[in-house]
Amino acid sequence: MAGLTLGVLVIIIVLAVFNGAQGEQRERTLITVPHADIYADNNFPQWQQAANLLTQARWR
Image 1: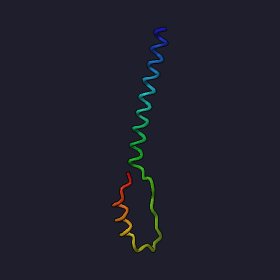
Image 2 (image 1 turned 180 degrees about the vertical axis):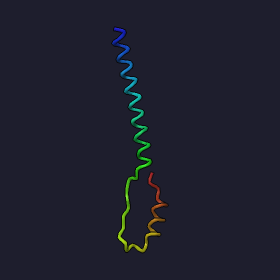
Image 3 (image 1 turned 45 degrees about the vertical axis):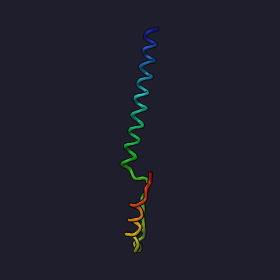
Image 4 (image 1 turned 120 degrees about the vertical axis):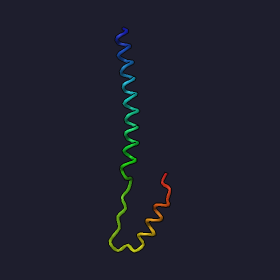
């Protein structure tokens, strides 16, 4: 009975650690991977104005 209890306790702890590690990994991956890519044709004369507007925007 004690072995079964200890085994269940170990499984619960391991799953909790993996769940926390998965959340941390997801958070770190989202920091490094862009959420969007912006493309334009070669004929885009206002690109500097658009770039300034995008850098001033708050996305959070």
